[in-house]
Length: 290
Image (cartoon, one colour):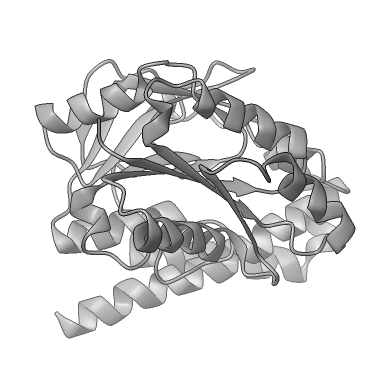
């Protein structure tokens, strides 16, 4: 069995992270696993962060990496990825939110069998919402264009400027769950999709070549499109394989830390705008070189 590394991005409730780790430790051939928990609760006081460290102090196959500054999703995941790459040389690395559950006992075997069937650089499993039952992969089947990124930037800028006026309308839009045709159950393997960043698998083809998973780094949002764009440019194959399944708690850890609706919506809009700018710059720069 190949060595497999797990990068878990911890934020919020320690019990959520523990449930995720427990599900990994129940997998077959767990002796081939090393888990890196990236503690992204950078704004918590030291005594509050000790609980996570103390829970796994006696585990040789679990490493806790505390993040000490507010750098966001991409940076934190890249830290865990680089640690595993440097110290353990795994043949597969699973990048996962802490509210993912690995319920297939033969999950590791399935990764390898899927790769042997048809080699991939990035694998997107079937991510199923714990409460909704929604199939969350893929999030898209094509890149967002420069024009779409520009529109996102402009609309978020306008809405943030006029936030007190437009808030009732925006709140209604956020509360209304959009119908997404991409989120219907897909029963067969599909190539070249934009994978959901809540859980994805990197094979040795990716690990041996790439220093980071997500680059350029965004704090939140657009990470999947950046990953897809870079993979497309470098000829890396992304595969969605529905035979490999995980359960997603749908952001339960962060929901417990959410303050007001207004604060949450402004946070999403602000970081979506910033990330869209980074994405737009990335594709504009590469297009000018081409």
